[in-house]
View 1 (cartoon, rainbow, N blue to C red):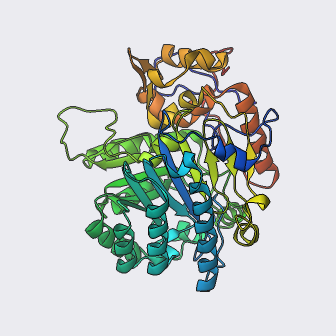
View 2 (cartoon, one colour):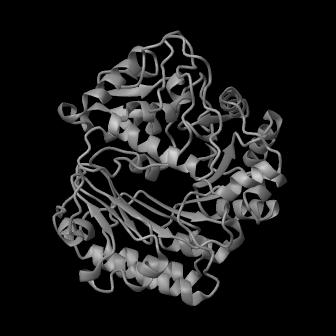
View 3 (cartoon, one colour):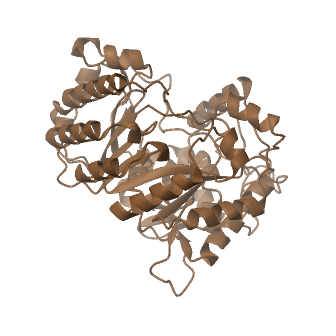
Length: 478
């Protein structure tokens, strides 16, 4: 098991290693789960608002080109409109079927996210058809955020206008890097001018536009990173996200191309120093962090330095990495549904999803697992949000190891406790990914370790993780 040690000294570098970056959704499947009937699970959902928040997620798996860093289910075989029409037929069948259950169709939705893949490959007509089904099947009376992901080569002004007409109020697209070598390694085929043009169009139409950037790439210099930040800031989008590269979920092709280009992984000390300097650089340029990875222009002109300003926030991520009672209802190939009592996993095979799923409710393909009650979820995911509302946790049911880890995180300055909530400190934000792992119960840690080791065995090169030698043995994650 990975063994993060907390440094007892007064330092921002509270962990002696950096966790290998790997995407996951908690809680994980385990041997205690029971496979349950999907229809019965949906019928048991209460026909009233949950104690938490409700999100709908729609997965459009088609891409013009397949980026080598991307960990999500996607396909480049969409060139014939008949293919995307058939997929949208299946998606709307699933929407109609799930909406027929009162616990889904009658419960107000707070957030919608359409991702992929790249949903912008859809035609104007397909976008409008999707919107018509969405508004006709679900209660959107309290909808706050509706995000559409874009890929710049497939974006047109007409498509953006169609998105806005169905209620979209936030769009996001991945730039990842402006550097020609890394764009080649990642198989990014759009041009920088296309990126700039889409940013201009999107800002004309939407009040909230986000772009994604990746930092800490193998061989990347600090000067290169700051040039990347400057070019991203020049787009004047509402927010800019800076993510560390997900080495463990990226394709084997990306690992091979890094080696072929003689690009050596950065040391943990280099990566964390980049992250610290990037934060100061963005602040010096008039930006302010809204979480551990995202920045927005400081339009409030704060007179004093603030740690985090959660305005605006990406509400879908805030809910996805939320509390036990927050729910995500997934639609589309590979989509995941997570509710208070079960998790359901759609097929990640296009043929099965389009030709078999939801044609006959008796032949459903989703795998649905019960016994998913998870009182510690809000604590485990709290470092992604930065704030933990005490009133939303059933403390008597939380595993003792998570409570012990949270207590030690407070004692060692990673987390600050007030009467009503917990908040991350500067040291906590610097190590928020490690802290998620640290707060996870031992069974979850074992699940993650197995997946990371499996990825390495498949040929992915794990970059160095040890930041410094432990200064005090025996203070370990529980």
